[in-house]
Amino acid sequence: MPARRGFDRTNAPCIGIGIENEMAQNIYDKPEFFAGYSALQRSVEGLGGAAEWPAIRARMPDLKGKRVIDLGCGFGWFSRWAQEQEAAHVLGVDLSENMIARAKADTNDQGIEYEIANLDHYELPKHAFDFAYSSLAFHYISDFKRLIATIHEGLLPGAHLLFTIEHPIYMAPTRPGWQATEGGKLWPVNQYSVEGRRITDWLAKGVVKYHRTLGTTLNTLIDNGFSIQHVEEWQPDDDQIKRNPDLAEERERPMILIVDAQRTF
Image (cartoon, rainbow, N blue to C red; front, side, top):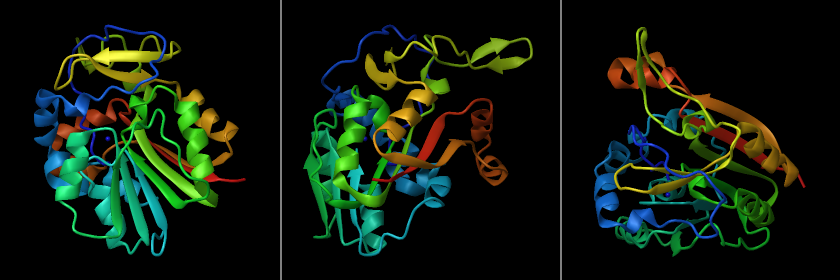
């Protein structure tokens, strides 16, 4: 789960909307999924291969001397970047044994620790971290409220949680994918208010994610002791589109939501 999750561009139907599971799906340890994910640009190039990284970097605090947790660390790209910024210690956690094995193999720094953990049940020690980060992982978590509560417990007062998720508009459709129209194409938005499980076929069949409205996402943070510092419905800038014209379609609807929240008490 870093700047790591790839973009789901399939037209596969959402074949399940229902109550949330208690256990996260370990899709990244399925051989076909892991092979496909490993070939994505962001998996090969790291943070520089994630188009949204400049916008995330603009919200990043000074990490020098900070204790950092990377929730859904994947290959460890952000964990290593945080250490390069002179963080005092970085803990990267991920459900996938494949991801953690790769992160450990690519890391040669005693200031970084990796741990296999299911974020649906993970408990952060009290006041153990100065900064929490997560990239495109939280939409795989069934119990978002519980996760935010334990992140609050693990952060010092005043510390920030900076994360990205797939935008609720991108997550909501029962049949995600561009639809052809006389004027070009459009992105369908239906079942937006019906929160819960979504199942799509992307790199492998039956990938489980959890849709929540924008209001639920932000209010869960507020109700659990965070103040919202910045919300960005990310889109590529002109220069990015010039370098990669395929990114132009990302202006048709928001795909990624960036949230910067601060623990207030």
